Length: 349
Ligand code: KG4
Ligand code: ZN
Image (tube, rainbow, N blue to C red; front, side):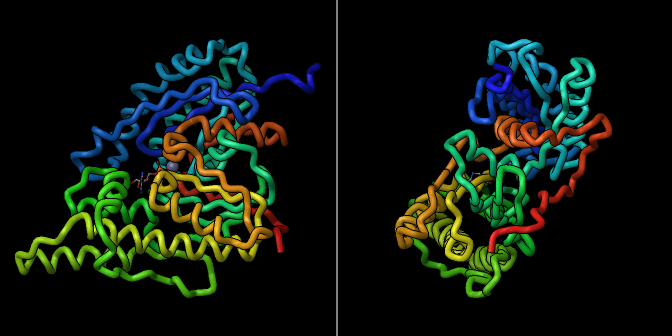
C-alpha cells in the first residue's frame, strides 16, 4: 500500500520576476499553481530590477503559499516534501524562495529538495506527457539557450550553450529598440507573423560543427540597421524587422537542434523555457521533426505556453524525480545564482 502512496510536493519558484507556488502530485499532475507576476513593476525600467524583484517576492510569498494549499484542497499534512529553486537566477530573489522553503521545512519537519531552475524548465514536459529516455531538450529562456541531453530524469548533460546573449535576452533587447515593453518576446513573435524576412540578418555559427549559439552579433546587426535608418530619417517596417529577426533566431535554433537529434537519436524531444512559447519556433521544430526519417523521429513534447514561463509546477515536477532518488537537501541549502545543471558522467554515444 505504501509503495502506491501519492506523493505531493509543495514547490516554490522565485528566481526572477515571478513568485510562484504549486502543489504537484506524483511529478505529473498539477493540483494548484499560483503565479504572481511583477512584470508591471519592472516595465518602466525596461528590464528586471533585482532589488524590486526581491521586495515583491517577500510581499507575496506567504500569501501564495496558503493559496497553493487551498487551491489544492490540501493542508501541510497532505504534503510529502517541499521543493524550491535555488539557482540559477538573481541571488536576492532566489533567497526569498529558499528562505520560505527552509522555514516551511523546519516548521513542518517535511524534507526539503533544492531544484535547479533549468532542470525545472525541462521538466515542465513531464507535466505535459510521459518523457521516454534518453531525451533531448532545447532549453530557451531569458537567461539560457542550451541543448541538453537527458540520460534519465536526473542526469543531464549540456551539449550546446550560448557563447553570449541568450535567445530571450536578444528578443528583449531588440524589443527595446522597437519600443516594445519588457518582456518583448511575445509581441515580437506576433509582429513576426505579420511581416516578411526582408533584412537577411546574420545566422551566427550555423555551419559550425558544435551545438553552441551566439546571438549578440544578430542583436548588434539589428540595432545598427535601426540606428542607421534613424539617422537617415527612414522609417523601417516593424513587422518585417520582427519577422527578419525571428527568422534568424529560429533558423539557428532549428538547424542546430535537428543536427543534435540526428547525432544523439533521443526517444523524446522537449522544448522548455520562456522562448519555447514562441509560435514560430514551435511550428518550425514540429515541421522539421516531421520531416526526419521515421527511425530518427522522437516523440515531441511542447509544454503549454503557461508552463514555458517561470512557474513552480515545473519545480515540483523536477523535485519528484529527485525525491524518488532520495536526493534531499538540508537546511544549509543556499541560493546559488550561477548554479550549473548536474552533469552525467557517462552519457550516450
Ligand atoms: O523562462 P523565462 O520565463 O524566464 C527565464 O528563466 O529567463 O523566459 C523569459 C523570456 C523573456 O526573455 C521573454 O521575452 C521570452 O522568454 N519570451 C518569448 C516569448 N514569450 C516569452 N520569446 C520569444 N517568443 C515568445 N513568444
Ligand atoms: Zn526561467
